[in-house]
Image (cartoon, rainbow, N blue to C red; front, side, top):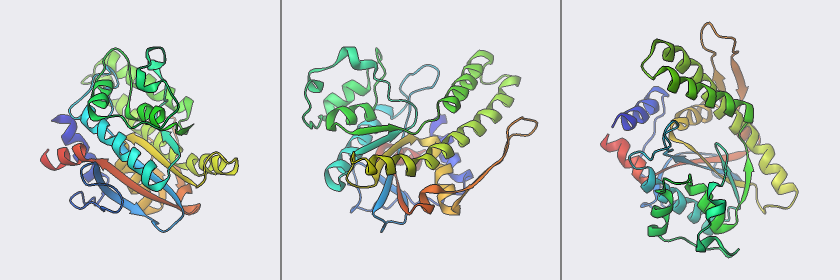
Amino acid sequence: VKNIIFIALLLLIAGCNLNIHHTDISVIPYEYGEVIFSINKESPNQIYIIGLSHRDALTRANGIGTVKSGVQVYRIGEWLIQNKEFELLLSDGFLEDEAEDKKEIFFRNDARVSLNTETLEKELGREDIYINAEMLLKKSYNLRTRQVEDLKQYDAIVEKIGLLGKYGKESFEAQYIRFELDYLQEIRTATMLQSMPEVIGEEHRTGMIKNKKAIFTIGMSHIPAIVKYLKQKRIEIASPAFSAYGDYLSGVELLEKDFGVTIIIPRTLAKLQIDG
């Protein structure tokens, strides 16, 4: 419940006027998710952002709705691949395949294979290895994948999360760590967004993909900031007080390079926001 309330508060604090009661059925089937924001839909260059419910950063345990929403992320991605010819997958974090040495039968060929719901739930619910919807999509449809994560920023965030675990989330030190962690997460989000036009452009120039289009999956906690940037058509991130960090001010490369952006929340997460 705390996680649900936290997500809802993030959406409100960010000033995102998100209408999650009406899905554009021409974009995504209702049972899969909700389109909460779109801009520049007429452009041939498109990014579809799908919000995720990640496992716990410290324990790696699945939370409320993580597995079910993961199935819906897979279905959303699959629908985009089949109906809108998406060939490129971008992801927050790193698509490390811990399952490489434990491949299941449905991964043993190069054919495009749609996984049934029972298989998806089984794989996404596994505790012995870490596997997510993006990995399954990549395997099922032989998607091109490109990294947009900045390794130094990622490592800095992992270090801060580790410090929260060391000192405890309710400790005095944790208050200052959270300020810096929130700033680093927002910088990380901005960096990933800003790198996308170049990454997609390179894939297109080299003939790896037919169109300048990509699916991008990212944790739900980043969605409010992304919507804010797109609505303002500008990225403004203030540094924490009494820190060595600097402010970040920039235009939005995706919009300046004529990309359209659509943001989708899996049905389970949209329902949890309403019910929560």
